[in-house]
Image 1 (cartoon, one colour):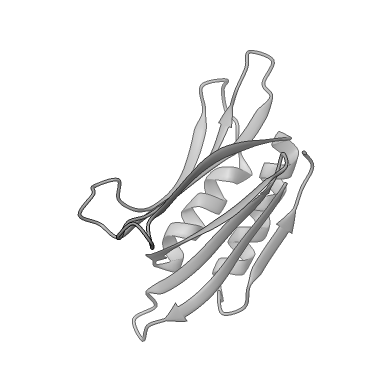
Image 2: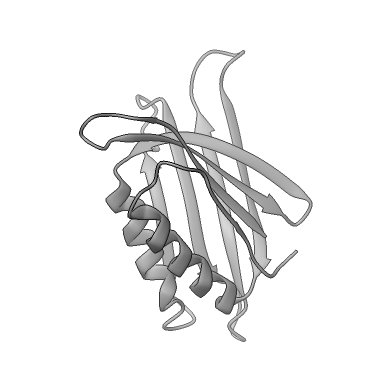
Amino acid sequence: MQLHIKPVWIDDDGLMQVRVSVDGNERQSWGEAYCYPEAVSEFGQALIDFPSSISDEVKLELGSMDPTYADYLLVRAFVYDGAGHCAIEFRAESRGDAITSSSVRFAVPTEAASLNEMGRRIMAWSLSPTEPFAFEGAGQ
């Protein structure tokens, strides 16, 4: 499982346009959205102690599912069975006309320890998110 976060553009107030990609389970895709570094930092912090139960989930959710918004991006860590196995779900939607719109959704199995380490690295990166972030963890 690989996660990449690339800052495409950063405004004077810290607002970032980011390109997020997930690769694994024989699938790979990316999406773009806007956020402040705090949103990414909160996601990383929540991953450090994930999972706290078999119903636990952690989300980085940017944009909106509202069709009036241009983009929606979701990276969700979740437990998918009673044995505590974990996965990352990736979902991205870009709205536009028949030529520019796209939609993708898939999940990649991984290990809780990989998600915890990814959280620690995201936290460190989010302190100065000017360079691309890359993480490769256990999983398909």
